[in-house]
Length: 121
Image (cartoon, rainbow, N blue to C red):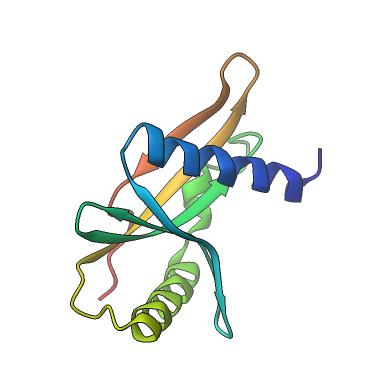
């Protein structure tokens, strides 16, 4: 399985986890604009959640969430602003989460959901 297929499976597992285990509603997947892409936008109660999904085969090079460094966080924030502007949702509370996904031969995937993974200043 190549990294693109693994990433797609990871995103599907993350969406399923957020819906079934956390009760979120997925509003949009793979939201794109000229600034880039956000993996998932979900609603947790009255909060809009911008979700970055990171899938890795191993932790050999660190945890998946470690790949969401400052530059990536900034890009996600630009995308979030684009989405809020496009749909006139400026007054809605928002946050940024990261979902780490790692394959597991017994259970399919191990998922770690990091709520409020980063805050932009």
